[in-house]
Length: 254
Image (cartoon, helix red, strand yellow):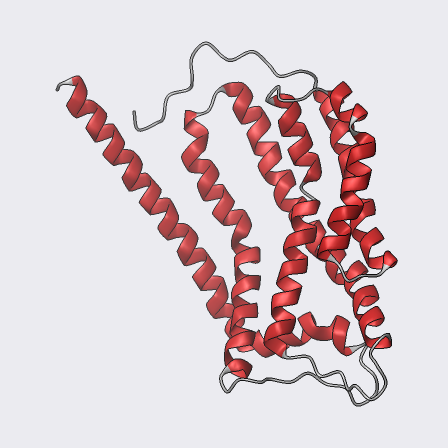
């Protein structure tokens, strides 16, 4: 067997493994989605509770399109299904890429994958339980006289998803800080010197992604700053980036 044919067979085996793991991930998400379909309307009601509880007496949400009452709850069920199946999806990704990593890369990558997933969940939970009540309370209280609040359910879902993404990504700050240090892009001293700019930037981000009131902006800016400080603390404990291993670990199919 020539070296070229051996390399081609190895490449094909990697593609087969990638396809297998992608199919497993998709089937996992689809299976959870099917299990959640009977509860789609209940899931949307839970998602809308932060707004519904802040509406004035008699306030309600509306659907402006014919198919919206059917498809929007299905979208929510799909979103929840993906979040519930995410650990399994990431396990499939890890199973594919881990054999080709150096030992020190494995020791760094797995904790980062786990911590980034948990931090994203925490960011979404913080938005739902901590931010939405203030945001929707502010919006409903500042509505002009004679204006009845009737939010479209699809537009509400879009707003909520944007907020989930904003806070989920904001909570990834410690992971980003640790990666910058471990990759040698920045060091802890530089990160500490940049603290004042990070604080200003955090409030700018808060002003962009939240309604124009000081409470909502602070609710995003303050966690951003605290998580940046957490990232510096973790990076200082981990130390400088390690030297590269002399040989990578071979893939099991090679």
